[in-house]
Length: 504
Image (cartoon, rainbow, N blue to C red; front, side):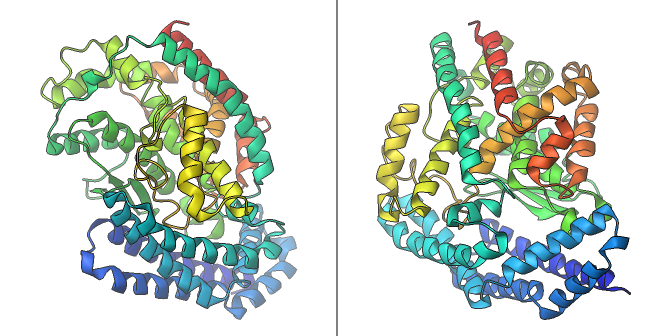
């Protein structure tokens, strides 16, 4: 066994341990009893430290050095594996294992405190734990900056989720998005004043909603019931997807009077799950076999949620089925009214409930707050005030309490600083895919009207899922589309879709 092969064995062990850590975190959010928080935080801290120690083992460094000497005989995939392994090793060896464990423990404590503070609408309960997490996260980033070749803390954090995408470049894309989405939001709002969405607020038993969620997840190919199933649907406060190849789990949150919330959450999370399940199996346990980035991840979830799930064609197929499954809950609502209601555009307070047009504005707000926080322009104690100001400025929304404001998301409580930009980057990537799809899969939208998703899901598998981390996200988008990174295709798509829908 040569040095490269030995290195891949080490990588395999680390991926297996990491997938086990993911299940601990899933249980933490789903079925863990309340009193177990301290024990679970210790478990997560220990496993995280063990994983870190495996990655930074000096033997791994030696194997990387030896494998580099043989790089002339390696394939493209093997060279990519070596690059990614060295990159991870160089970064993680900079971070003391004590800090890794302390950070993991604080993340668990912060999430638990966030849940309680959000329920109580008490920011001050959460603030000190968030401050600890921010301080620890800054320390980690400062250790890793040199290894990444990045000169500021926030760019270093973004790089964990969107490799090689600095904040300045993201800011340019986001400025392009904002310049056209703000006027588009106003046009949509003005043109849809008479549209009623209260027709969607029908009380439907949670058991019925679970049946709908299972049906629509099965329709897009996320299997939770067969003998070969690799997925689950469970319930949490904040929906998420976690897992690895053969064990990828989705969590949802149900509202008795809002079935369309869980309908679109299911599509969104299943988009994430399908990506994880359809990564190239030949690369399982290898660095190249991971997701390209969280932005590419979001492009897959938002494509299934919006470009499939909110399309006229798909809904023309599914609306009668939805009516039947809910006992005729929407029988008094015409299809055209239903279509406009689920595509309704209005500024709102809650990101995960936002429409397709305003969603990116929610993300831009979070990006700007994070950028200023880690540049020292904003303090943790000022986050509620800054949040409320930006929601008033960007979306015209008055925030009534911090639970619907600065504490609405789990990301900061989890220490996922730098993650938020990936959500809007997903929209950018999706827009770029559309032209390629139109050429490669003519008539794919018409397929949806018959409930046939095979061709479009196949395109996603072949062109995005299966490429995994063979390329950085920017390069993957360019390989798939033949174009440099730009927000224009998404903006063109949104303006065309909503002009047709609302007649302006």
